Amino acid sequence: MFKSILVPFDGSPNAEKALKTAVEMAQTCGGAEVTILTVYRHHSMLEASLSMVRPDDPGNIDDIMRGHAKEVAEYAKSIARQAGQEQVRAFVKSGPTSRTIVTFAEEHGADLVVIGSRGMGSVEGYLLGSVSHKVTGLCKIPVLVV
Amino acid sequence: MFKSILVPFDGSPNAEKALKTAVEMAQTCGGAEVTILTVYRHHSMLEASLSMVRPDDPGNIDDIMRGHAKEVAEYAKSIARQAGQEQVRAFVKSGPTSRTIVTFAEEHGADLVVIGSRGMGSVEGYLLGSVSHKVTGLCKIPVLVV
Image 1: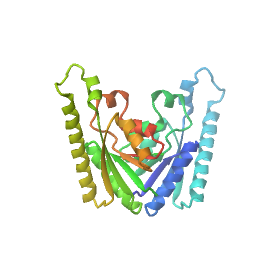
Image 2 (image 1 turned 135 degrees about the vertical axis):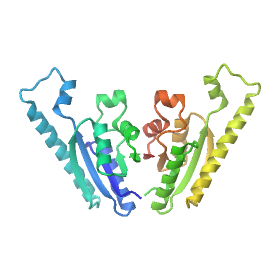
Image 3 (image 1 turned 135 degrees about the horizontal axis):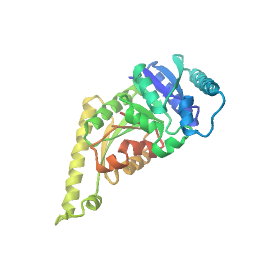
Image 4 (image 1 turned 180 degrees about the horizontal axis):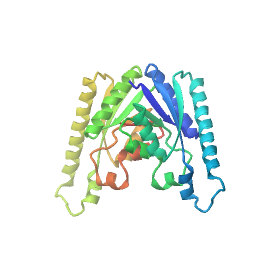
């Protein structure tokens, strides 16, 4: 029934649980494709919350963040492969987490999002509601919260 | 992969959409059972929000609420049957909506909840976050928000 499943992945145990459920779901649906998305925050956004700390070369921070996000996404891909999922791709994007996930889902024609109920736990998540809550609120397609 | 799917049903278009997705899911999973739950508020809880209005015979209100909830649940059952779902049961419970759903899911050993993203729209939902948000937050099993 689902053909294209998007799994936002931040490296947390809940994201791993969501990924495994997504793979099981893909196989139950007769071979849906699984797309992994790791979102990281651009330096300028980090700076807004850490305005007292100004590094000499902010460019490096972006590179490090992107590099780390890539590692996390590749790790997710290897988990999916180990679970028997052949059709799997991993992407990395920078931006505000929930909106980036929702936009990516629309642009890539996903028909289901599978997401962990709690991620790494940011202050934003604590105060304003978790990423999973925002994604379920913003997404026009079904969202499975694991 | 899922064997027992719970669908909270309040008669809203989104609940109907959730029910149809649940039936499709049940069939994709090779014949899971679908359980419908309609929650209504007990008179004493309504009274708290409408304390200026005191009917002569509050007992009747409970009967009317329960009767209406039963009709809504039976209607849901007929939709599920029409969609080809044979294993379907419908229940009616009174209590606070989200907690009643979560407790029912636990007691009945459901392994998935499929819920509409927005229900009838209560003041509580508007102020404190929707029922679907609370259910995803409180439930220990996966919740599919449709």
